[in-house]
Image (cartoon, rainbow, N blue to C red; front, side, top):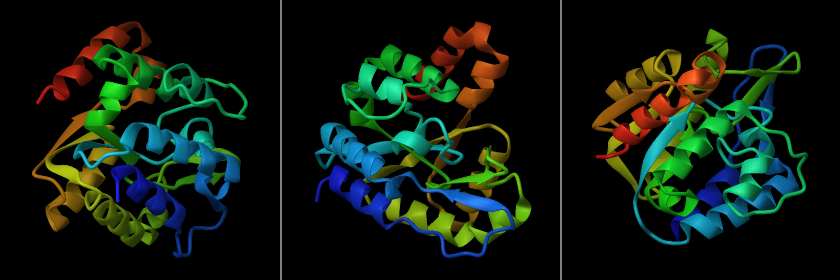
Length: 222
């Protein structure tokens, strides 16, 4: 089974059985037929081999990027422009995707980048509340209720053929703090490198984007 087939099967099987806090909804792009078809095309294009990749972990999918396309940090525009995959989704940009694909282009392009790295999230499914994105750590009871789901999801993805020497964590605050805690308990990775989250960069450090692209590339040069 190829890396692509493992990812596709994993995405298709994702489900949260836990009781979530009142008003919290699950963002599950893989239940959408169009999104699932697009993800199959994406992973088949870039992951149809058995090469090991280094894992990059974000927080959880959002409503305008991975929550729409099913591909982490990839909005419908980037999916067509940089990945060559046409899609039926409304062509709206997403801030984090803007940064990630500037970085990917600087790395050498999608084909080279995805041959080396596998992007996922600590929670591979996203969350909403009151019609807005919700991070898994924004509500402590949500974080606690899905911890088993998070641990199981990470263990399953490591079995794809992921390098365990180094993991890149997107988010130097709560996301890194939580992943580091889990890693001490379960020894997923030998080393975790925290990086500024793309949304933080684009919202608060936009004039320094080139500098942050350099920070990412340096972290990926092992």
